[in-house]
Length: 251
Image 1 (cartoon, one colour):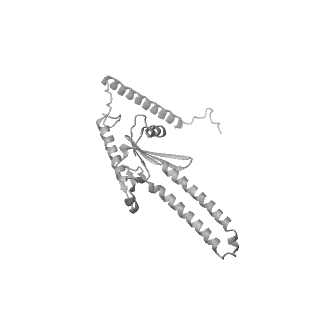
Image 2 (tube, one colour):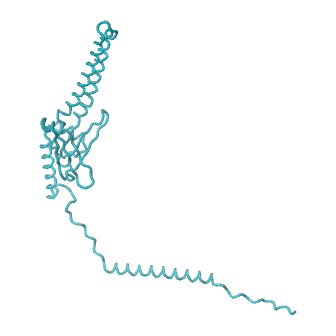
Image 3 (tube, rainbow, N blue to C red):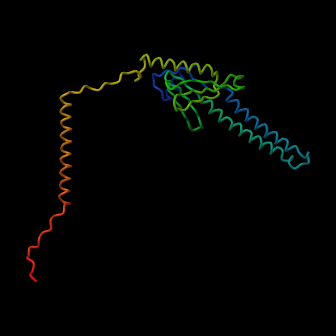
């Protein structure tokens, strides 16, 4: 999808991207993703109306059901309208979903419900591969599913029922390669390839004083330990029993 100035402004306001981040492409679902919902809704409505017509035709003109034929058909028509209206909701939600490719990341905008939004963001540096899957109908109508593989234990990203999936995959891979080349060329702010900071030089005299201080502290600790042990030994050693101060009484 061609990115117009209006679309670019709206997406910059809606998405968590920088003001100077360039939007390269916007991808939306193939029309087949919307047609499936409408086809299901039309099939259900056709079944309801057919059953209502058959039910009101049984028994001939003298049947009691035939008497209420118009009311039954009216109720079936109301249910059919409600079903079609309910089918419009998921179609509208899927029409709001899109995949946005910028020069730094890939973002997916999802609409789980009418009152909820979800945005998944993946940096281009975390892309390891992009694969395309197409079933029989996808090959015929030109839609497919894209899987963006990430290294390590990160979750892969799946984008379903996209129009021209091969073109989308090539553009995502090209954006990843350009981003990676820009990082290695130093055209973008990054810590990749920066030299490791060296430790400051140590003054030999200060180091000698530090060692002397450590030895002094260790000697004080040893003296305190030895003094504590001596005091404990003096307190636990039994004294010599004192002799009776009074002389023994003569028998």
